Each structure stands twice: as structure tokens, then as C-alpha cells.
Image 1 (spheres, rainbow, N blue to C red):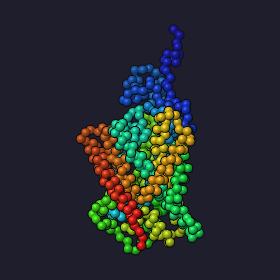
Image 2 (image 1 turned 180 degrees about the horizontal axis):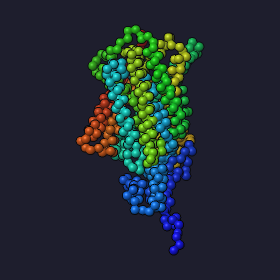
Image 3 (image 1 turned 180 degrees about the vertical axis):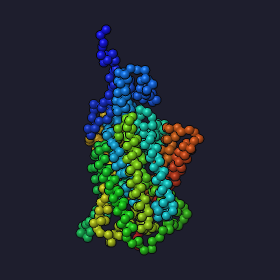
Image 4 (image 1 turned 90 degrees about the vertical axis):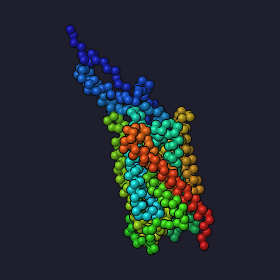
Length: 520
């Protein structure tokens, strides 16, 4: 009997490959094509679950070799994830070539910035002991919730939660999750952008005064006009199409943040301290005023650890396979980023309070440095510090605005079933930039905004991740893990309410001072 070759005895259908969509996005990027109906299955199934040693043991060598090769191919291709074709058109997910380096750049750019400059203001109300204790607890707490969010990105097989709101909807239900997450995340992005316009505009004004010196014209730009200049620069830079395209911008933001934070506290502690300095917490006329001020100070510390609303979005820019899941490079980059964040926040808070005590102005350590040491520090060094702050604010504006841009374009593409054109995308970003400018002009109280932002958005960082871990991972009821996350979550909600009240009181108080105070 004539022998037939092995290739004719065994016929294995070709494994379908996951291809990219035919339609390119406005920026020319491509995202994976969603799976067909035949490829969809229950959440418990994985593409290689049936190719086990027990299944392969009775099969001959040729077929075993083919199946093993097919298993390796499927693992390299990745999770046959159910993808939304609309994701290929949106700024967060239209490019998925991120890595651990990009994760470090984005997390560092989002996690450290102008909020570090107002930490000494919180210490002036809390004092040494309570200030350091609150800052340490907040840092450890947010590091734990950061780990939770990284792990929950692909908690369900075959599903990637690309946005914070999507994860909230999976945990709390579609309606309740949207109601709980959309407001604080959008408020955090827009509120941070507004605060960045305030800091960036005021810093540009100080930079111009230092560089120009006595040669300045008799009619310099007003503070509001500097806000407008800074907003215009932000809008120009915001035309970069997607989150991965601003990796270089985030790198610049990270480098400038580390540099100016180090320069600010080193310059402050290396100079003579002001006379009549005191480290006693600031006391206000009434008990109620003191209580609200302390709550606002704790809100400032909470706001220092912003950036968790961007964790899912940053991880969504990374490819993910069975062998190389996205949470590995994400966590590696996040650990490096938050080590640098600690090296920035703690020295600025402690060194700034040591240098200025309760004489710290409400604008933060940068204003104190300029007010107390503008005459004994070289103009070039001061100008360089302020310029680095401006660059960092421009960079941070981009990454915090990206979720809002994504939301605008998601609404547009859902209604029109087509990607945004370049003109539509640019129009959204111009509109968003000037809305934040007008909000900043109407509410120019930086330290009060920081406290209010910290209170209203605190659940995003400290509370919701703990609840989502319990609802999605479902630890054993009554176990330590179960109690620990429930307690942390409800503590976060309680602190959010208290800090928000303190922030509102501080804003009203600062507004009344601005309206009725008249210099003698």
C-alpha cells in the first residue's frame, strides 16, 4: 500500500489572524479589528484552554506538533478580546504601541506638578506632625489603589477596561457607574486644566518680570492676559492626535517637574529663613474657621495624589497578550514613576515648610521663593525655575485634557458613525481650552481650588478602586481583604465630603476677601 505524506493525513484549518481595520483614523493610526460573532464565547473560555497536556497526550506526534504551534501563535496574537470598533477612532485607544517607558513618562507627568508647590500651604495649617503623617498615609493609600486599578484593567478574560468610567460601569452597573465616575473624572480633568492655566499664566508673568527687569514697558500685560497667552499655547500643543503621540511631551513634563521641584526646595532651604518665622499651625478667629481650614489643607494633600483617573487610559495604550499582559509593563513603569513622585513631594512639603513656616503665602512655595529671595538669588536661576514650571504646566495640560477630548469625540462618533475630521477634532480642543480659561478668570483662587478638587475627586483615587476590587474580584465575605477594602472605601467617601466642605468654605472666604479687602 502506497504511503501518503503526513501533510495529507492531517488537515488543520488555518487559524484566523486578528487584522487591523481598513479605515484609518485621522492621525493615521490603526487599532485591532473587533472579533466576529463566531469568535465570541463565554468569559470562562480562552483560546488555548482546550490545548492542555491531557488533551495532547493521546494524539500522535504530527498533530501534537501542529496544535502546540497553534497554541504558541494564539498566545503571541493575544487575548481574542471583544473590541469596540469605535475605539480605533478615539484618542485614548487609536494607538496601542505603548510600553513601560511610556507608562513611566505619563504617570510621572500626571502625578507630579503644580500641586506639589502648594503642599507647604497645607503644612502651615496642620503643623509638622499631622502634616507629615497625613502626607505619608495618603501616599501609601494611593499606591495601593493604583495597584488595584492596574490589576483590574483585564480582570475579566476577553475584556479590557480602557477607561476609568468603563471599569466603574462594570463594577457598579452601567447607570450607577456612569453617575458615580463621569462627574469626578471630568471634573478632575477640567479642574486640573483650569488650575494649570492659573499657575502657568502667573508663572509666565513672573518669568517676564525677572527677564525684562527694569526695562519692561510702562504697560505690561495683566494677569488675565497672561492666562490667555498660556491658554493659547496649550491649545496649539493639544493638536497632537492621541495619548501615545504625547509620550515625548510627557517626558519633557516629567523631567521639568523633577528639576524644578528639586531646585525650589534646595534654593529655599539654602537661604536664610525669614525673620519672625513660626511653625505653629495658623490659628483663625473661630473654631469653625479653623476646622474648615484644616479640612481644606487635607484636601490639598489629597489633591497632590491626582492621576488615578488616567491609569486605565494609559494602560489602554499598551498591547496585551497571554504571554505579555499589559499590567506587567504598566506596573513596572508606575513603580518607577511613583518613586520619583515621592522624591519630589516630600522634600517640597517638608523643605518648604521648614524654610517659610506659617509665613507661606497661599500661592505656594514658588510665590514664597520669589517674595522672600528674589533679591539674593540670581535672576538667571529664578528665571530658569519659572520657565521649567511653565513647560511642566503645558505638558500636564495635555495628558489631563486627553480624557475630555476622548469623551467629546466619543459622543461625536457615536452619533455620526464616523471618525472626527481634523477640523472637528481641533474645534473640540479649542472650545475646551477657552472654557477652562473663562473658569480660571472667574475663580482665581489656586489654593482653594486645590482643596475643593481634592475633596470632590478624592473617591476616584482613594475610594472607588477599593469598592471595585470587592465587586469584581469578589473576595471571601468576612475575610481580611473584604473588610479592608470596604473600610478604606467608606473612609474615602467620608473624607471626600469633609474635604469638599472645607474647600467650598475656603473659596467663599477667599472670594469675600478679594471683594471687600481694601488696602490702606
